[in-house]
Image (cartoon, rainbow, N blue to C red):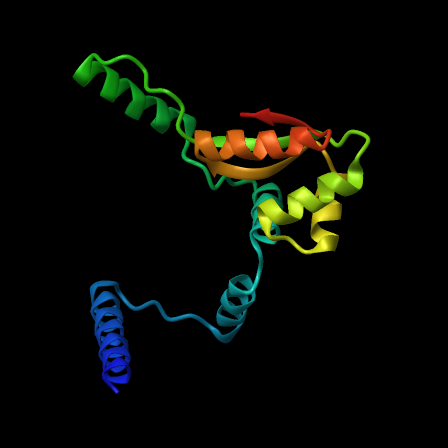
Length: 158
């Protein structure tokens, strides 16, 4: 009984928090087409979203990343202000460079690492060299590399 009341209180607290967050943000009105696009994007997996971003960048000649000049300005400002040495890289992209002889084992490992379906994992393996995971921590990237090299794949950390 108390557990049910606790769950109800949690739901009410979440609803209140969501209302407060919505009040802080200006409301944006979307057309029906735009709302359909948003709903479609919500159902996509990470690999599909990544491919969509790449296609949109190519088609419209834009980039979703921070401009190099601005990134350089931030790095330069941090070094000038603190005089500290450059920080060690904290996020890595794990790239499948070569599948090797055990393609099926590599597909199985890709599926467990990325939670992709069989077809998506096979397509990723067939299109090597291809990023498996981006913005991974050093430990996570090393673990993925260890798992995939154990089944014969060649992995690059960038």
